[in-house]
Each structure stands twice: as C-alpha cells, then as structure tokens.
Length: 139
View 1 (cartoon, rainbow, N blue to C red):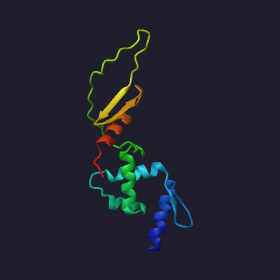
View 2 (view 1 turned 90 degrees about the horizontal axis):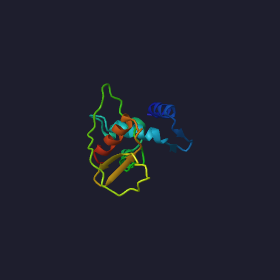
View 3 (view 1 turned 45 degrees about the vertical axis):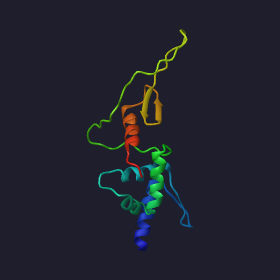
View 4 (view 1 turned 60 degrees about the horizontal axis):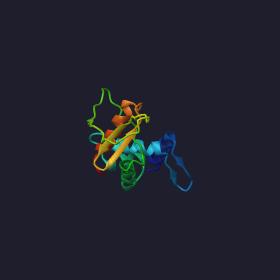
C-alpha cells in the first residue's frame, strides 16, 4: 500500500500538485479540469478516476459541479477527427441604435437561461469546448 501511495504522489507531483508534509494537497485548476474531463470519457466512472488521482469521489464530484457552473474550464477534447457541435443562429432582437454607433459583433451561445457572448475571433475549438461543457451530463 505504501508503494501505491508513493507512486500516486509521484504522479501528482509530475502534474504540478503541491503535496505538503501534513498530507494536504494544493490542486492547480488545470489538474482539476483534467480529472473532470477524464470522467466525461466514454466508459469512465467518477470512482475510477478518483482512484487514479488518489482522491475521494465526492471531491471529484465537487470539481465537476464547478465545471458545470463555469468556474472550472475543461481542456478541449483530444479527438483524432473533427468534432461537430450543434449551433443555432437566430436574428438578434431588434434594438434601436444611434446612427453613428458601430454595430457590435459577438458570438452568442444560449442554452436555457445561460447566455455566453464571445468575441468574433474566438477559435472554433474553444466554441466547441464551451458547447460540449454546456451539453455535459449533470452530476
């Protein structure tokens, strides 16, 4: 068992997790996001991924909630082929603009009561990652 703990700690340190003498760990957001992303892979379970990272499943579920609330940004999925995400384009509600005003161009993603506005130069990969996060199953 001691060997497994040393291997886990070595793995975590390689990811940038700070491990203190008391056993307390400081997890960078990118490592949390990576663990959450692994739970979204086909066939993965929260229990199995939590075991790989040496944490309790409820801790990983808390990170999943953060991701769902937009407080933890997941890395883009690594796919061997292009990914497609549904995108609906609709006419914006008409609002009177002063004649000298320059129209503001944005990309809007709306799902239910969630509304996300992105700059027009946002990459397709980033847009697809946001749409995938919005479509992720609930915890």
